[in-house]
Image (cartoon, rainbow, N blue to C red; front, side):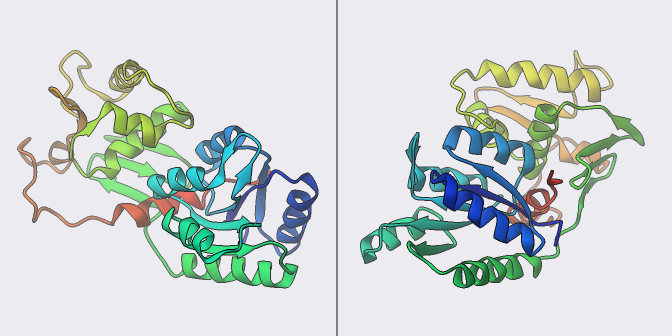
Length: 260
């Protein structure tokens, strides 16, 4: 069960500690946060399998944060809330929560819901590695190997490359890359250019004439999957080689944070 990492985002310190203690007693790796800012940092660094999220937090709306989590397509979400009307529950579920538990609740029910959500997660058996021919991305150790050589990447460079790989060769805008690969909201798209340049220096044969991480004019960047597979650089047709769905790949990474 240690492979399952759970992030608790709860403003009440007593409830947060109580939930964390009970989850640790049954074997889960647990991280705790009192606010959204810190929760984003943990999410980015640890990629939790499950996020237990209070709907009302001191620095923002938990429902809005739930929407953000849902967009990342990495973690399942159990929302906790004192709001117990049907409209509140529907709002939480539509925001992306996979389950909704109203306060107050019993600890046995809470643990049972967590167990059921983790059980559904475990039924998915995606690979622990992405293999694109010359490029292998190890989602467990967060390591990259290119042309049989290990590439030393920073955590941010790894996240950027991983998000590009998830796109399956499709171009991604700078704003999309900022949203999916960065832990905090950043408004400067040139941040992407800086990190792409750094990645190219480490992974391209000739960074001045990149062939792996391609610039798409007026759009952003794409990972040249075709060159990795030994094919032409023509973008793949819709019926191209089938790969594991993005949601499943994300959930591999989500379960691989090593709890302290």
